[in-house]
Image (cartoon, rainbow, N blue to C red; front, side, top):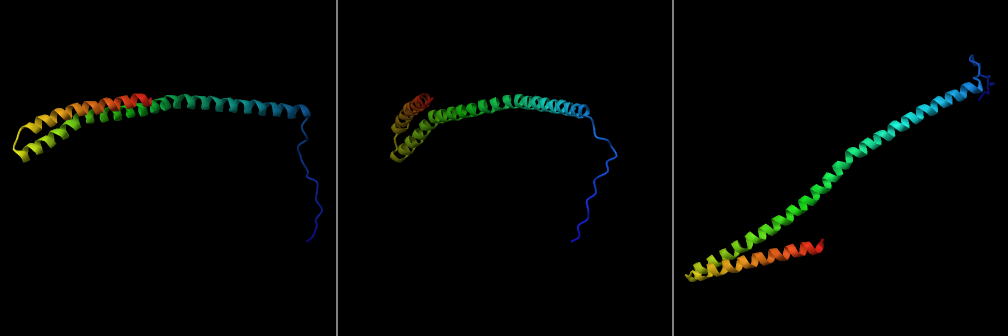
Length: 127
């Protein structure tokens, strides 16, 4: 390995005065502040655009939960009497009578309403 002597660099431009370097630094600071202010404005604008979307998602989730609960209550009010009517019809068919259909329809209607009220009370207590 041969060591070559290092030549000092020959700059053709003279060194800047101290005033010129502070002026360049001031311009740099000014540009940096302008970029930072633009970035801050863009972040605020982005946050403002996302805020209604976030609020809308929250409302959508709450309404979906309420819709699901309402459908559960509706299916209870309609479904229990229908199942009880079907059971009464089946027993009437086996026994050749007409009493059980009416009896099970009445019991199913009352039971459906009682279960629906219990569901609503449980939902209200959990809130």
